[in-house]
Image 1: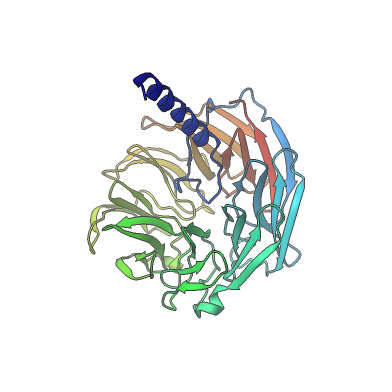
Image 2: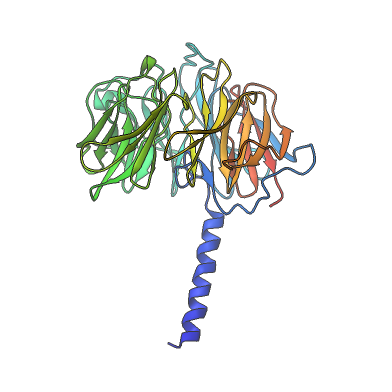
Length: 404
């Protein structure tokens, strides 16, 4: 093979890989890389004019479930008349492609209630966790039930106080959910339990994969700690004691370059740990980032996040990853949820405005703002292939189309 032919093949392969990356869907909570960021979106990071280009609106029921997408469908869950309903909506029109419903209480103690977990797509299937610890495996195209397991009952573990909230994590042939002290793993093909953890209260975060001393592992938030356990057996590798009011550890850990960032609300604060061996070491601790619901998002060495009690009016901040120093803070924004689109912040305010700004260390400098929803918004927006999906707690959904 000549050098010229090799060069052409290499260039063609790069283009194909680039195309795959550009078309990668938001198929699980916090996106393909579990980091709250879309890359190579080819979007300017701002809206044109002062009006959003609303493609369609829909109503899906009360809840906090975010969105996952394929090239033709977008999925989310809501509560209507005593049932949780998994909705599959057409990306083109917002019309219902299918619905799957199961009996569930609204369970609105201390908040509006409804589902708090986001579905996970894996190949031809979609996995859904209920607040009562039930795991459903559905056909992605039709909504037909493949299997279901009441994991709480089968694994003989208790539910956390506000029910299961973490999204299912599919790794290899396992689907892992955050219930019990350090999770339960099931065979994704039939729902058979592969391993379980002790009957202690779980946290509310989604499991996060980790490579620990050459072992495939996952980090699980319990009510009182963050634990790393092996994927193979659930064996504990290490544990970090992490006490929060109401056992409410809800923000996913961020793992980067051999370090791990943890943060919880209710005045708990944050910390960065150096991983390695069986005893993670504290790099820094701070009260300057308290992620009550949403995990922060890391870009290079800048950590963007919502700090404080959402009900009282949280603020949006940027911290230095290495030191925990506050680089800037925006006090008046009232953020409801956010994501990063390439190097731009896409933030949904509590009262339904989409705001964009460069994700920089120099300060909060918004570039555009459009109103898209009326109602209380605490769910992070999702950007996928030139469309933005947002919702209110009461289940009003909007699809905003942008020019890429």
